[in-house]
Length: 150
Image (cartoon, rainbow, N blue to C red; front, side, top):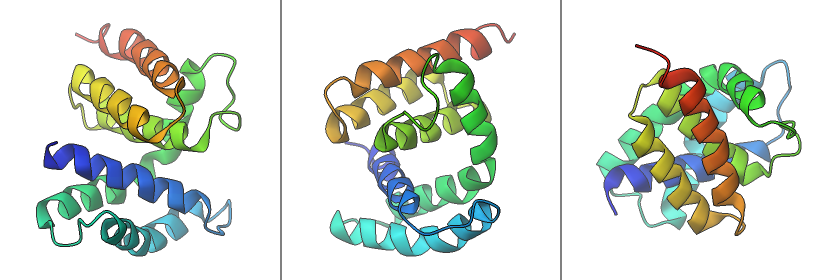
């Protein structure tokens, strides 16, 4: 497994940890930006990644830049998860989708890479059907937003 996949796994686990932190809805972005480094450190320790600088730097960069864009990312997810309001999406699935949509839409990471990574991470951490749901949402986003863009 490459360092980017491991970093993505740490990002997903950190995002999941943030969901259970007490935060004000109005100050969520600011509080997430303040809290994520400590959670990332704990997750890295639990996964024995605390000494892998390249993994931690990539994970930190993703989180630091993704958190301010989370509202925009969530809107994209809402538009393409037909019949699934964001509150009904399993929390871990949502974390995977947030990272994937951020990378695909805002970082312009190639969609096939992002979708494959998201599916593999969901197979590792989520319920059996999660990978199908994640794939369906990301595929809809890809076909609607990316393929039509010249």
